[in-house]
Image (cartoon, rainbow, N blue to C red; front, top):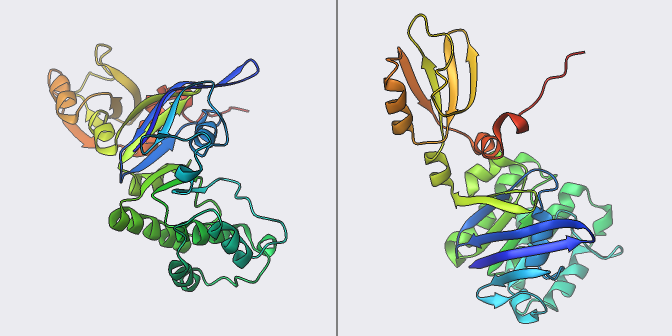
Length: 298
């Protein structure tokens, strides 16, 4: 389990993390989402032992992360900007990783060579961005980590390789019980792989729940009211409303059944519940229209 409680980090007068709290259950895939500048990467740098917190606790598997070399040897990390020595090949970095990860498996390294098909003797700096990201997965997954921390992990990969990489990660989750925390702006992709989600904004974690709970606690309804009702009744607790013709689309923070019961008082001609995407949940949990796309009239 990954546990972060009361995590606070300041850079001069700027508070990057403000009592942030995250709990990642063992063997789960946890998606950390939020707008740019929310503090996601700063939180990840605490989980990987790069930053030391000003206040709060950062624990993985019940142990404090800071200056814990034995624990870090069980944590695989792929940051947004993956580091490698400028003149190194993948084989050179393999030897480097083996020096820090006792569980590094050469058998798996050889199997993944067939999956990725990259020349291990080629200088990494001469590889494309997507191939460098593949090399990062090749090496990190060969470390056989118990915990995997990923920051924008599939950025730059083509759709086929994205599916391949996620298949490898999910295979480790199901077969080895690997615990995964992934930060990404690709919410559609996270929706396919995550079972828990945390939403960050302004240095705090606003909420964290299973994806199923998030979808159960917010509903999108398409409603057609009876003739004469052209506007949404003001007493309805609507987060966002839009209208095309006679069809009103309403976002409400409640279950689909509760929303239907509230609407029944107005005898609508049609009430149809539509599943919300993680992207829609993200927008309306962060403040609805304030985070939605804005049009500019020239």
